[in-house]
Image 1 (cartoon, rainbow, N blue to C red):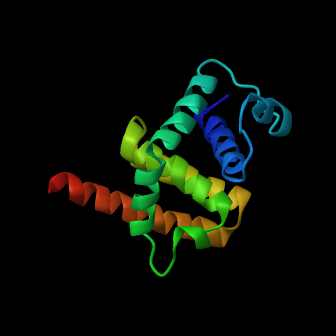
Image 2: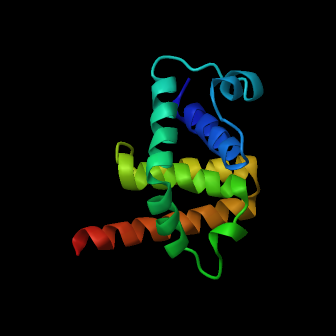
Image 3: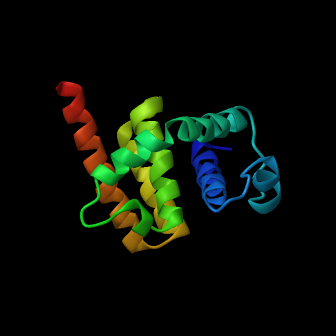
Length: 137
């Protein structure tokens, strides 16, 4: 599998966890029908545990980038996409930002709508700009 598929699986598992589910291996193989290969499982686990460990910080960063919105108004699936991308952009820093944003936009469009994809793109562009400004300060 690819990072693209692993990211999609992580978004779906994060979404399930946000709704009160476990988002564990049963979800991965049973509901999502995703069979991890090579380092896919480690990548998914790192994303999800990283999000859990940094959830308050990630949500605060995301919320700062919202204009006229609050976290509780964002569709849960879009928030799941934003959390995965924000973690990769702000904490993991292994993947180029443009790749992360492109992947997040594609996932928002896949799991929600073109309008959601534009929203996610705007939030992540703002997040990238604020992250870079903070790094220069």
